[in-house]
Structure formats: C-alpha cells, structure tokens
Length: 306
Image (cartoon, rainbow, N blue to C red; front, side, top):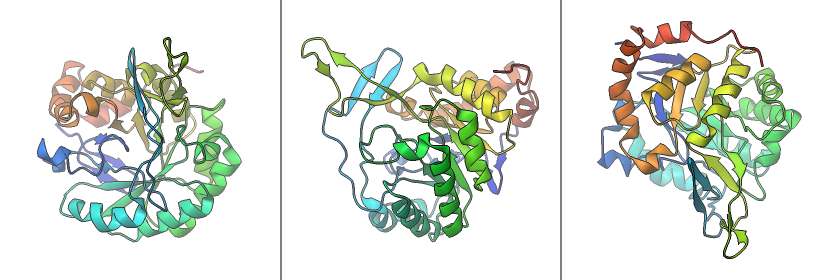
C-alpha cells in the first residue's frame, strides 16, 4: 500500500515521525529498530548555547498523559552539529531540525547554522514551547512577533520551514495565517498545553518550574479541533501531533486535515511505537475502506464549521 506523502519539497516514505524532544537525536532508538523505516526524524530542539534545563522534578504523570518542564535541555547548536548529526548522516530518511531561542537573533543564528548542514532537510521553528521562563512563549502567542520571526528565518534559510504552533492562544487560525503570510512552508501542530499539578501533601506544585507542558491522549481532541480549523483556511502541509498512540489516531488526524503525524509522549511508554504504527497502518486503512493514504486525505472532514 502507498503510504508516501509529500510535504511541499519534503518527500516522506510514510507519514510517521517522532516529535521533537521525545526521541533525542535517535541513537538510543536505533537499538530497537531501523530508523530508516521512519517517514522522518525530528530531532531535539537546538538553542544557541548549551542549556541544562529546569530544576527537578521536571516530569509529572497525569490521568491521560504527562506534564513536562524540561526547559529545552540540549548541548547547543554547535554541539549538536559536531556530536549528534554525524550519526544521522547515513540514514535514508529526512532529518528535521527543531530550532528554539529566547531572541530573534538567537533563532536566526541557530537556524542559519543548521540550514548549512546537508543532513538537515527541513527546519521546525519552535515558537510555542510553554515550559521555559525566558524563551519562546512570547513568539508563539503574538501573531505579529511570530510573523516577524518567520520572515527572519526565511531570510537566512533555504530549507523548508515548518512553524510549530502553540495551542495556548485565543485564535489559532489567526496565528496560522500570520506565519503563512510570512512565508512558512508548513505547520506543525499542536505543541503542549500549559498545565499544573499540586501535591496535596506539600500544597506546592509537583514540578519545580510550577507549570509544564501537557501532552499525551488528554490533548488529542484539542489537536484535532485546531488542525480542522486551520485546514479550512490554508493549503500548507500540516504535521499533526498531540496524543497519538494508535493507527486509528493517525486516521483521525489525517481526516481532520493533517498530511503527516508526529508521535511524542507514546515513545516514552513504548520505544517501538513509531515502527509498530507504520507496520499496522496499511491494515487499518484497509479496515476503513482505503487503498492508499491519498484516499484518506481526499476524504477529509470539511462539514463542520467552528
């Protein structure tokens, strides 16, 4: 069965990829399966300088997912280029670099450096991470700032640019329009929702940071709704994410308007989840009467106005 998908200039053998921050740089997962089976690999966020992340505890379980406040821990863009990307060079699957920063200048510097590496085939612009005290949150909640940032990245990078949208906004459609107008080649959505847990014994937040990003099945209905809304106003490729654990979830995301999907939290529960989803997807499509992924896209839900 044909599972291939084109995200603009980016050609994928199937629509399944790990979400940034849930797969590291791939080395550990390569011990479980051949990473060439993936449609793409989205690597952990890169910043201008090494970041050591937030204080612990940084993770808390929830009823249908998890909260995290990692704080964009990473070795910095130079460390990633020197020590992490060489491992990915031999893979026959596109590598997408996630770019983060606390200023437009930092974003631009990181994106420019990564765009000059042949291993990187696309950039994912992280304007929406809600767990950094001084970082991307303002970029993901202000359409004008997001538009300016997108323009600046497009100025220095010739790689396809996917802007990762935050759900922590009043108007997701307005945000999508803003970054498309600025030249975005695609969208990734959604990032985590801001949440909190309080320990009844200590009467304090469980996370040292106070709040964190909620991910997992709990946010799937929000992701489906937002993707559906945005698909009504744009033809840009959309990488959908938010609580995907089954092939039925993949089908639902594509029917909502996504072209490909990214799996995040489920990787922590089962390191084989991406491989298993790819293996199981053809049977699921047949179960629902489809002979290709393209047929699912052609059957997208368009009846509902929100």
